Length: 308
Image (cartoon, rainbow, N blue to C red; front, side):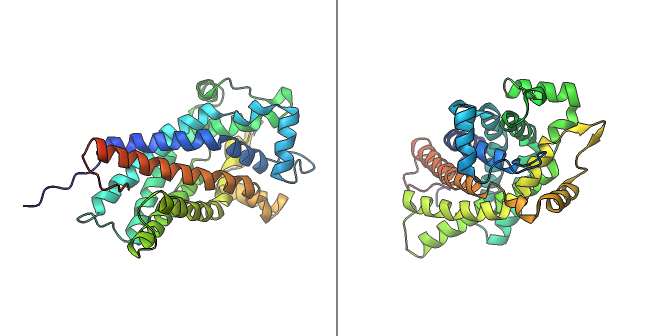
């Protein structure tokens, strides 16, 4: 009788996902900061503030200091602990549930899992995402208009106290839409490419195939999700003036951005977005694969060297 296949426990999948997210976010946070600033460049101004991300980076470095690139890091790490751990845990758990004798499900099943994963992750991580956007954007505002959040805890407390608990879920609809797109394009693209490379014998299931698969996955994710991310950023950073919000929702924000700034405004920050998502995706999947391999080897006694 064949021995029962040992699988990584669900709680470990959540922990590994959070740790992988923390590792990648810690390395790539300055790029996330620049992406947010670029998306808000020209927002509320008569002229465009920065023509390129390099101009923006130079401006921040000279005028605000190098530590400014890490504004919002605490919110980013909390977002990984919540959003990324849930997204990873749910996806990998459902992937195991729909696998048969170690054979992963088809692409459409993976896409369906991606939808569920995106919704769950966005709901849990949205408050930290709002805090991250606001903390990263604060430095571009006049001193009198800055929120001056001390850290992510202060940001969440003041948002609830000053704007109500609904402010924590501002932009949650586009965030879910973005999370669905990211989950489908990142996980599904990564797994399909890796399976193709390994099954066809082009590469082994190792660091090299993980790197190639994650690089391609990062490019697909960037192009597919940036417009939704741009709208989400505006919604989460908007202010309510005389009781009237700047945007009423996803479609209203997207329409107004296109009308006032042109369609290209939805692709502002593409360079830092990809420069962030590319390395972030690479580091994330490498960390996740290695953490899974280590757990399988040292806890489950699985020396096959395979991760996800």
